[in-house]
Image (tube, rainbow, N blue to C red; front, side, top):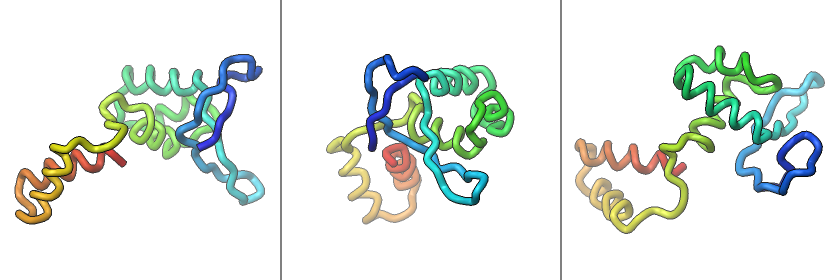
Length: 118
């Protein structure tokens, strides 16, 4: 993780960047693309208005970010359904139980919980 100023002029407070995407540069190298607070806000508004299925259309409104970057930013950083932080004791127990009992409906629900923590 890195620290970077939000906003174009850098006058705003420093905020922790929890996610930088990698974009192809014209010379073929890789470079990190930072997300501004404005881009995050725009992405949130677009997903609320358009849904989370047409990433090509959503990305057309956010310059310098690809559809893959927009999708990644939403599902791994901004989605309010995303659970961040350590697992609860109950979740740990579900994982232990699921690994013993095998692929049953409880196991699939457990996997859904696990993947929201990634």
